[in-house]
Image 1: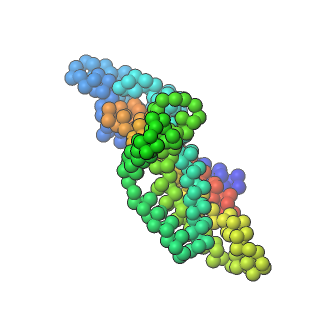
Image 2: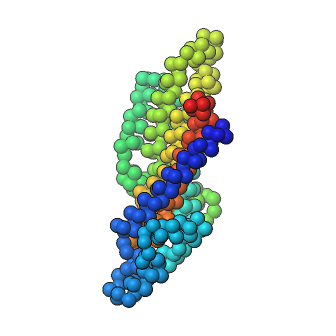
Image 3: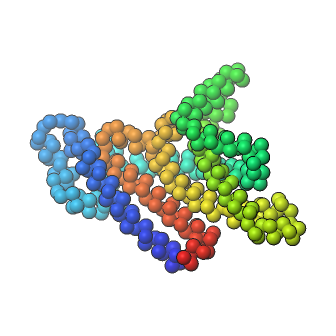
Length: 321
C-alpha cells in the first residue's frame, strides 16, 4: 500500500508543476499588464518602465516563473495590484469561507445521495424509483443561479410574510444581523441547499447504478439463499461494496468545489473563492489570479490523489494492478 501511495504522489508532482506553468504563462501573456494596472492605466512611460523593473517584468518569462514559484513556495504571494492587500491573506480568508460551505454541502449531499441511491436500487423500476429519477434529472438540469434566487425570494422573504413576523425563522441571507452558531447556520442553510441539489442529483444516480450491479452479483444471491434478510444483505453487504465508485466521485467533486462555487457564492454574496476570482478577473488583477488558480489546482490534484488512494483502499485489485 505504501508503494501505491508513493507512486500516486510522484505522479501528482509533475502535473502540479505543469499546471502552475500553464497558468503563469497564460495570465502573463494574455492577461492585463500588471505594470499598467499598478499605474492605474497611466500612460506615463517612466511610471510603467519603473514598475516593470520593480515587478521583474523586464526579465525573460522562464526567469519570472522560477522567481514566482520560489516566492510562492516560501509563502510570499505578493500584494494585490488593485487593493495592495496581501494575496495570501485574501486567499486564506476566501478559502475558509468556501471550505465551510463545501464541507457542509458535501456532508449533507453524501447522506442524502446514498440513501436515495440505495432506495432506488432496492426498489428499482417502482413508482418511488421513477419519482427520484425524475427529481434527479430536474436537479441536474436546474440552473444554480435561478434556484438560488427562487430560494432567497420564497424561503426568506415570503416565509416571513406568511408567518406575519419580522424575524428570520429558519433561513436567512448572508450578512444578516446577529452572531453565533444559530445565525451562522441560517446563513449557510440556503447556500448548502442550493449547492446540494445538483450534487445529490448526480451522486444518487451513481449510487443507484453501482448498487444495482452489486445486487445482481452472485454473492448477494448466495447470501439470500442462506436465509439472510434482504434488508441485511442490502445494507451490510451490498452498500459497502457499492460505495467505491461513489466515494471516488465525491472526492473528485469535493476538490473541484474549491474553485467551482462561483455561481452559488455570487448569488448569496458570500466572500469565498468564487467571489475573489470574479473580483480579480474584473479588475485585471493578475497578482491574485495566478495564486488563485494555482491554489485551486492544488486542491483539485490533492483530492484526485485522495480519490486514487481511497479507491485503492476500498478495492485491493487496484493496488495490485
